[in-house]
Image (cartoon, rainbow, N blue to C red; front, side):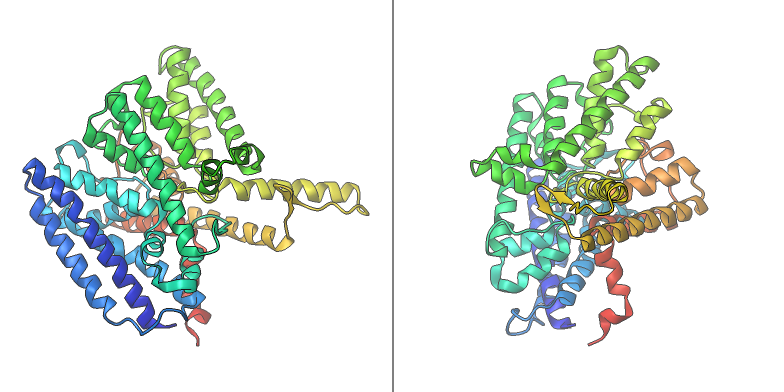
Length: 482
């Protein structure tokens, strides 16, 4: 491993994060609130640390190897949240290191699980910083770095492969830096579009910006304790629902549509599966919730179902209802939806629908081959043949994913949480959803958890954000050998 390259790139990332902290500091000054000094001190500390690390850079970056990229991504996603926690610590909003790091890593991994018991008392600067951590982490701080600093050249592909979530990491353009800029262009367009629509729907400007950052990143941090439910607006619910669903779709499809090929949406099998599961879940939840009467009539139940199912499927974590109080059938549906999450190539978390579709296709193909042993029955996805090695990788990933879920649930149960809260907290943090069931429901938070549970969930968030293998390989003995 070329440790100087690793340190230098992480240093540049810290420089970018430190610079980003200036924006909420300016907002704090505009509102005349006292967190400006804490944000400026955090920006200076982060940028200074980044500058010192960047000074160890080699003369050229062109020889970046796969293991360098994996190390950079893993260390960055551990270290950046540590510096992202400084505004909470310096301002006194979260004076405990455990809580500050938990809030920061939840933001950057776009999980949205919070330990803040009353977000409405936080000053505007800190609220914007919480949402900004979502937005930076959503498309990925590494991809942002590649987009604005193409000095890595062809070596940037190693970072791109290691950081971008999902089983497919196809380039949209011949150059990786250009691909990163294209992705960020779509990302910015969706963010601005939602912000404008929320303003038209009557949401205050500051709230619209923060919620747009959180929606497109599928993060879920809100500036209101009651989340989107605070506004009690059907128009706002519809807008946020639309953009949550869009953010859970492969951004390559959005780029294709913007390039004049909207038919790409209809041709994508993963998107069809994603839409089908969403529709079925909305129907089941609407019927179950309506029958219980907890949300009122069928119209209110449908409105609650469309929003909250979209929130869980896209791994955003906003809420308009306390679904922890819904009937068990509806809760089970939401819990199951946390596992597949969104589509590959989106900002959503979870195992990704593409893996689920391929696994189902693999099973059905195996059954057909048993019935017709002499027939040649290839497995295809979107018209292209899928190799057996891909299915093996998917099977291995799902085994690791479920193992992580099981281990995390055991650790949380041992820390004193009840089984429902422990399993849902692990599932929701692994998938990057945020709110769970039981004591970590959408109208509750994670402040009451023991420090062990918070650190364990912090690790689970990072594992889920980087899809487990990227992190685990760093602990493999052969990784460190020359």
